[in-house]
Length: 116
Image 1: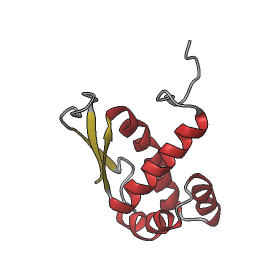
Image 2 (image 1 turned 45 degrees about the horizontal axis):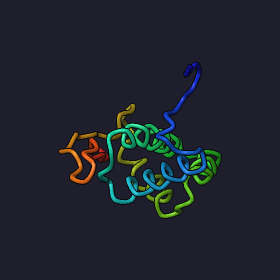
Image 3 (image 1 turned 30 degrees about the vertical axis):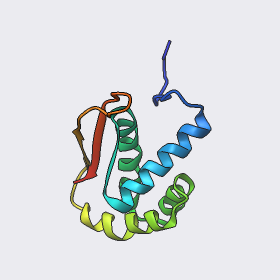
């Protein structure tokens, strides 16, 4: 039973999953567009939107919370400096997901995740 389970496990242990989501979110914040599987994109979207919302508030406490989740300081700096001002008047929905053709090797459903 999945009662009160907040995130999808994506078939990985928690350490691996957290590290993978951290890397996906950092790359999305830096490059503003990534291509990954649909399942990973759906989970990475929620992580990234939470980070941008904290960056919009911009307090020292929020910066420390984001730095605890992301270890890439370049991505954190870009979120707080550029993206927070870009999405200042937007109430949410900072990402867009496009479905792509299946991956050639294993026919996994692919998606492109980008910042609006």
